[in-house]
Image: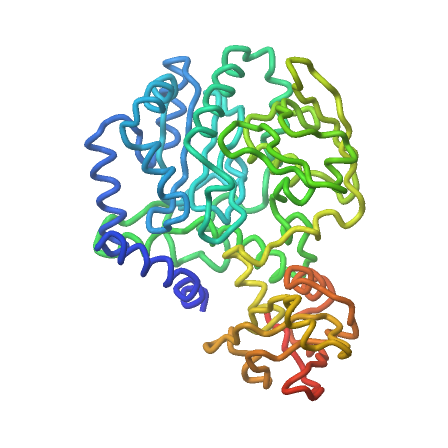
Length: 442
């Protein structure tokens, strides 16, 4: 079943990759290995060897995780791994490792946003993490989140931290997450027996790969299958700073491009042009570092920040009120396909547009979500079998009738239901009200 869901989620992306390159998934992966090994600059799929070389050379370690067939961040990936003079000069000061799968990955060491197709770790030879790079807030577009200029700027910040090590070691300690109960991806019950600890470089090399998004899905299913509440930070992982009103400049390491009016960031005193240096005691070298801090923040918190403004250091306090995570959007995430199966039966829901609301003026639209797509296969066809149709307008869900986003529906139902439940839904279809029941699944 998971294999079918994986295929459905990624078929469009893989198809576009084949169209753009004329290559199938297996060829893409095999060609990547050939060109990287022929170049001789990168260590391929061997983090431990990278750590050994970092210790022997005294250089910091760069580990890049890359989903080869996925096109998101493909341009950045090409600029980094090819012989771009500006980046290659800086990379020569690192021990560089490229990993194209998560099979065998140490899940306690490498904790990051698993909805990405390109993510970088900067580390000391002793395993201390200097920082992360790689941010994503859209299914395919990446220009607002990452750039080669931003990556180069982050490389410089990491080298500065490396020169100060071990003076800054203590401040870097929180960049390593706590030990987790599942050691490696292939040990998750939904992946066990289907994947090995490394790739099988044969005719089905792509099929033997555990993708990053499968790790994120597996964590959610691990809690669900154990009958445990899915933690807030697993439902809303790695919050993007834009939900706080911080629009970061992707061409820099961590410079504020814009502060949205009326936002929590504006209340805290952030200004355009601020270079964010420290957040919650951790040195910041990228937007991904900001996300790491936010990921670990409690449901309410006051985060102390240090910014450089006009050449001077300034202290700020960022207050995170109750429910701050839920202002973020998780519907773009590949891992949200699992939520659609669990609690919406395969429905894809979108908020009513202002034009649609105007057309329905005088009608109580309540929740205000329109069914954009109804899943057609297997567990993702549960809502279809229950009678839901495209363009149905949901008015109330389980007795709640206030406006909600699809992300909020996910969070609400995942917290309040269990597999086997039937959720009452009131909807509008052709101007008439109907009552249906939405099946909740494991």
